[in-house]
Amino acid sequence: MQAFPAQALLKWFSAEQRPLPWREAYNPYEVWVSEIMLQQTRVEQMLPYYERFLQKFPSVEALAQADEQAVLKAWEGLGYYSRARNFHAAAKRVVERFGGKLPMRLDDLLELPGLGPYTAAAVASIAFNKNHAVVDGNVVRVLSRFFARAGEAKDFQETAQQILPKGRARAFNQALMELGALVCVPQQPLCGQCPLNGECVARKQGMQEEFPERATKKRRPTKVFAAACVREPLLGAGSRDGLWLVKGENKLLGGLWGFPLVPFKPLADAKETLEKRFDREFGVQLTLHKELGRAEHDYTHFHQVIVLFEASAEGRKLVLASEKELARLPLSKVNQKLLKLSGAAISRRS
Image 1 (cartoon, rainbow, N blue to C red):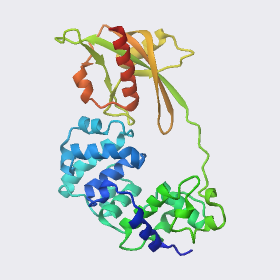
Image 2 (image 1 turned 180 degrees about the vertical axis):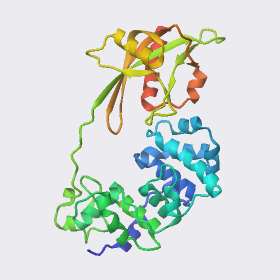
Image 3 (image 1 turned 120 degrees about the horizontal axis):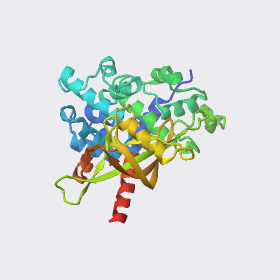
Image 4 (image 1 turned 135 degrees about the horizontal axis):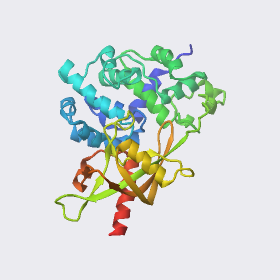
């Protein structure tokens, strides 16, 4: 295997690394927070959430003692909410089994909810400088170009472990990821700024953009739903209305609150059909009125469209959320969009 210029990369990282907050002291809990948040989320996108989350839950103990609804509320907007639920469960386990101190051993980390091989290796190496290679999309791109070799993360794991300088895992893993994020970018890589450019095989061959091979993206299906906006006066609240929301129970949005939804085929389903679906799903007889608008959101495997209808309920007293409760309930991004639609409709009506 071609020799890898690890020292040149480490020197570059020492001079060019971004001043990210968890790099100030490498506090294990703060590193753990960053790695959980960086799953499926870019650094610049997660930083405001990171700062707010640590203000609210500054330690493993604080997170373990928190109510799940408070954790989800603090996570609101980051998406992939199973990360937050698993993180909360893992914090409880760290307190129970390890006295509130994040374990250093990879095997112990792998037993925590939400820590697969990649995240466990990242936490072990970055928080504790353990000699475990970390291979994400950025690392794949750097190594694929440097060695001019196609492959996925699993294909480069052994290579990354072999070139890892022992005792420098913290800096080396971050350096590879940083190089991929800032210089060895997917399109039009900045080869002139790269500390590896003299020995990069793909660059020598003028094939930088040929590696890694791009997988053909599958087209995401679109799923359409109807949502019901039911507002009723709150008892003892004068003329103020409460909003009917339901608590999610599925894996995707478990623990979050939102408007009640049913599947919807806009070209085929009449309002009467939707009303029967709401009755079957929620045991509530609704009358759907005008359409208030629609919201869209992209998930990993599908594109979601939700059409919001103004509605009234009959025959059952609903649990309604007041304005104060709405402020503390965790809502997904798409439900925040729906909430704005419903609020705009109320302001027009009043």
